[in-house]
Image (cartoon, rainbow, N blue to C red):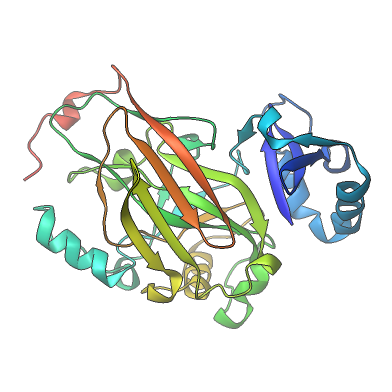
Length: 295
């Protein structure tokens, strides 16, 4: 099942090129704050599934082209991200950035990215005005947690996955705290909708790629991950309770590169979806913290 947020927090089931609204079934109030309609759906999905399927077949359809899709889970409890999770990207970072060689994800763990950095498939990536820094794209798979829990084992981990979505992790390159460099508004586009896990059965063989202005820059598969999806869930839940709607970003493959205003970025993940986003340059967002040289 493909589930989407649209037009101010309405919730819908995507059917082909159409969407069927199900907001009333999941207590989603349009334009409410906080926007938690999708969290209600994820938490109650086992009980709601039959009703959602029935509505998707019988309810009025609206063309997707006639709505504004939003990031599917707009108010997760947390966004968890795994750095340096592909061997080729680790080597790329050692060679090309001038930064201290990173530890791999299995040795350094994860970090948190601000929820306010989330954006949707209809929003541009907005670059801050930091003239002496590069801002890079990172192509990633988003894992959306369904059943929460703590101390989740590898054997049980996939039972806690609700679904998947496309995710671009945008980052200011430098030595400052990673959370600051990755948490500008629009630095975490997720979408175009979320696909329930039963539609993506081979979690360890999902192909993904990212292109800029039509040129493919990143291409990999989840089979290449250092810390795989079950182990990400095990590691994160060893530290903190996972809740329905939490998002885990799997880390980026090799091929990261700079973005500039005027670029167009496309992320494509097999069985999950694709998003094409414009990149725009803003005049704000600078701060003296960025003035020191990278190296």
